[in-house]
Image (cartoon, rainbow, N blue to C red; front, side):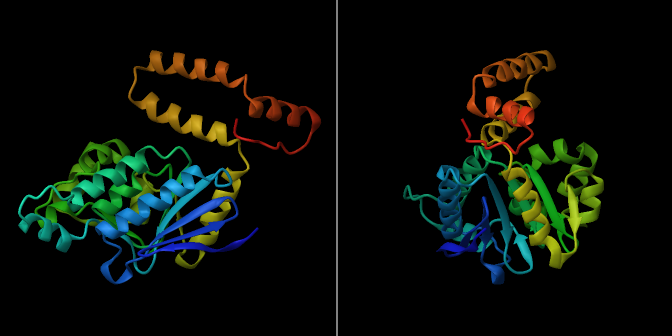
Length: 268
């Protein structure tokens, strides 16, 4: 297993560890706030990970004391004071980022290493699994600066933790601990700070042994199923299974079980 950086897109760091792509937000002095340059780099490496067949899991984390503190409000203020000229603003870049995150077909793990605020929380809510350092503080915070959520904060948070808890965080702008967010069901595990990377890598390695085809379809079925009537979702799940029986990975999984060996999944 090779560990090491294969590309740096400042302010983004991209590393491959086993079959996991680790993407680090790397503006630690700005609490990893989202600038246009950061968003452009992040979209680029997400696309690289999506297209790389050797990558089966994507991990998103941050450098320094923050996972992400949301949008760079200084850049947002500059955009506000610009004359309309057709040039894309920070919110346009953010829209493209959330489109990329929401349509990522591979499992996404958010490794919350520290402050996770506003747009940072919205990014974390696009993840399939959320693992947090015990030092992480999590909140919405848009209301603290007279800003509305735009990446799903007001829409996803009630679905994640319940309407009353979500309204409290949205209206007060308060931060709460990773442990509280675990109690709310948003965070899967809370890990000592110095063990976060190792713990997340173990999860990524476990997921990487599964069929890439199954991983992709499970993500799709869960996401689509939440938006459909139960009867429709169940019917479509069964249809997906029937279609899946024609895949190589389905045959390989059954053969490996019968032959008492580890399956060699190909993703088709």
